[in-house]
Image (cartoon, rainbow, N blue to C red; front, side):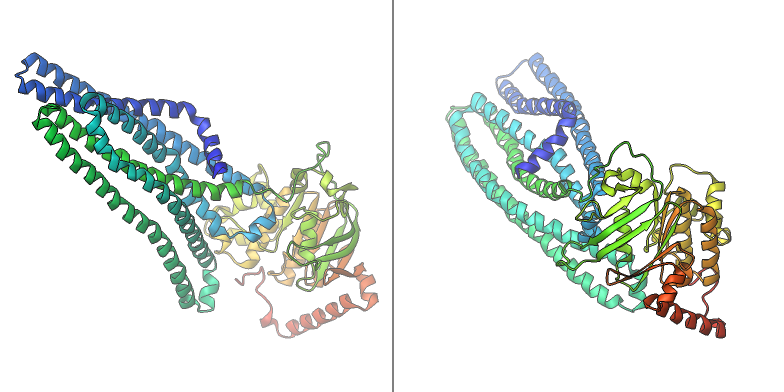
Length: 596
């Protein structure tokens, strides 16, 4: 908890002036409020003693001034303290998002999207409450408590004050136990909300699959279970509050009863005046808010610090990939060398995804990678792009340099990557193609689209390049998403281009046209192509065949055909399939990959 308080203090110090002004305004309001009952008591006693009209007018005028001061003060503390809390929420949200951007692939593989989204909604809301209303409540309660007790002792009676306060001490003792229980229950509540958020996000993202497999009832049942758990954890918090608040009212009621009995007796026997008795009862009423506020502050502090802890855990997460690059390296030229590349994913129990892979690609050459599903193709290119790190630093070299000696921004800028998951943003087609570059003209976008054989399809869209695609590009076909992703990569004009099975959803004629365009457009630049169809890769300078993470075969198309091994058997099988499609053309995919 100490770390969570320190983190909250770190952000609060950024807006110390706002807090200072806001707290000063709050103090003025409390001081004036504490003076009002005494002044009212003076007025009552004065009227009983036939106070002159001038005296009455003076007190009334002072009360009006106090009312104005309270109004201005309340505006001041709300403006500055709530403003500081909103600013902290903005800063924390920005820092949290920025930190997530630095984390490695492992973190996102281990944490669900819905859980992370819950940190940006519920948790940040609780932190805002902590840095705003909770600070106001805690400070206001403390100041009011001190000022009111002071007025009760000085203006009325120390003995009567002691009798009135003794029951209220029980509230502070109860708050200690209440705070601990609230902290624990609120953590469970936030975790339940994270589960619920993740399930909703996953179900909505996968709605097409759910409908395709008629699993709506199963998803509703799963959601109902998670929703019920979320309700129960929320009720656990509510139940705790519902028990605490009536007990608080009971203690306050006992205090007021004692005040009426003892204070009334003292007023009857002349130990205090009627005005003092009325003022004292007003003071006891004013003590109710600080006592309630103490409970609310403890609850809010517990909730806020619980959420701050969840956020702190993310902010303390360290990226696996650390930039150790030499600043003098400013660009890549396209040379790639793998030296006995071996790699195991975390938690893989020592079973390597790649084992002893050695390949050399000169700038301007094309390396093709083929293999069965799970043979390590995507892992290999992810290691070249340094989305994961190998155990030995010298296994991957670019342009003759150890990969870790090259700055990360240079690696990611000079490698254009089209992943298997052809992710498109909820934006226009043109903005999706422009995503990887700082700027670009429409003519350049169109040239990239033509090279990727997507231009004609785009022109058929309702608004051409200004057509909005749905979330993750669900409103366009799989082949169109692939080719839009290729166009986006071509816009970078990077020295190294990686296509990770990026032609699987297009027909063979379109595939051949794209490959011809790539060969022409990327003359002198390095290209890595992962594919299942040999027609996509037989033109490559080098072909690597992976089997269970190991190099099964390596060479040119003609060399591998001559070997008569795995590559040859795959080629023969695909040629047979091609022949069958030619005999039955109705089975050929629609040109341009229009099948969704």
